[in-house]
Length: 101
Image (tube, rainbow, N blue to C red):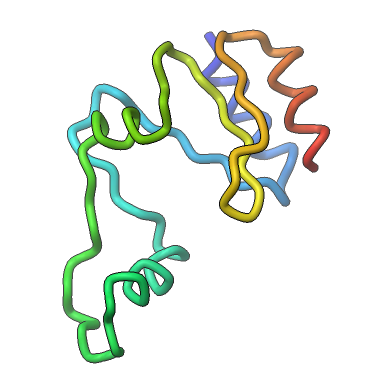
């Protein structure tokens, strides 16, 4: 299983943000630290603080990211996808993360 190893990596590489999308869930909520950016993009002028956070269906996120197999790992930097790994290779996953650590 790759999930426990993914969790270990998230503790080992503290300056890397790890995000897991569970394909068995119905919706994905944006992380709290991204909320301010999202509100600006939605045209919030600061008076919409009570507006609920934007949600997306998992299927929409998976389609937007072009994910066709599980597990798929992406490395993103400054909003641009740098690399993708399809499959549960622990060695390849950690090697990919080390490159961007």
